[in-house]
Length: 334
Ligand SMILES: Cc1ncc(C[n+]2csc(CCOP(=O)(O)OP(=O)(O)O)c2C)c(N)n1
Ligand SMILES: [Mg+2]
Image 1 (cartoon, rainbow, N blue to C red):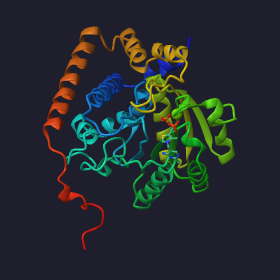
Image 2: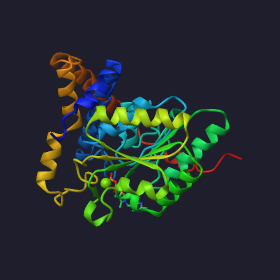
Image 3: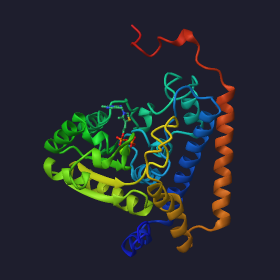
Image 4: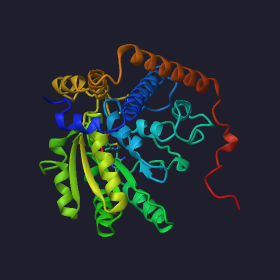
């Protein structure tokens, strides 16, 4: 049945420390609730411009965040707040970012997704879709030259996979055997463009053969399958360096941004993925495996909600950056 964990996945899950699954679930809930808080702030008119969330796609980022090692490098894209949070960003950092506060990751220069923390191995994305794959590939090459066994993970959407930058970076990484995992989060839409108007191959992962690399597919709403797949690939390319393409099938459960009513998405598709919500699926399976119960889950939710509402309150109480700082961070000081 779609969305259910298969016996094979369950067996793999049983072989992983149960604390990992609690981390995975906690991080998905944290990311979901951070996104929901961002939406509330946007609706309240506290955020300039639009807001972009990853609701429904959390399992993909969480699998990577939990599987990564300290030296690894990550290139998040639009829907990866869970990756940021899983690699060390705090809910307060995200609130400061979306509210453009001076102590946020971009010092108030940006109010949405173009942020990262190099100290956590997370690059700040730039808007140009597909452009971050070559950045993370270059970063991994540099780290390896300095003796680290780093691997990289770049996230792109189905739409981003149509860009020239995507193809150039995939080809480069393949030729130079750069250990990067490129994950296409196929959420069926690139803004309002459906998959049927985006590509003519059957599956995006079919392109791997053209680059001479391996390609795998996974259910992007199944956190266990995602974790087991991502962990396996990352461990393997760490010792046997090469790029791998992974297509994670999922669904964007909101509009492109909060300004978009996504009326172009058929309701049945949203209903189907509502039933396949990654948090619901993971919770159900973890309860069946006696790794979680209702009271422990409610306590987890309450603790997360308290942290997020405190973070929002704190960020709202801070002032916006002073105009005097406008030119700081643009050029290196002479
Ligand atoms: C090269 C490039 N072309 C167009 C855009 C404008 N743009 C920003 S997001 C987006 C849609 C992205 O769709 P997809 O890659 O599927 O990611 P999703 O939003 O579905 O996560 C577009 C067209 C851009 N940022 N960069
Ligand atoms: Mg998309």
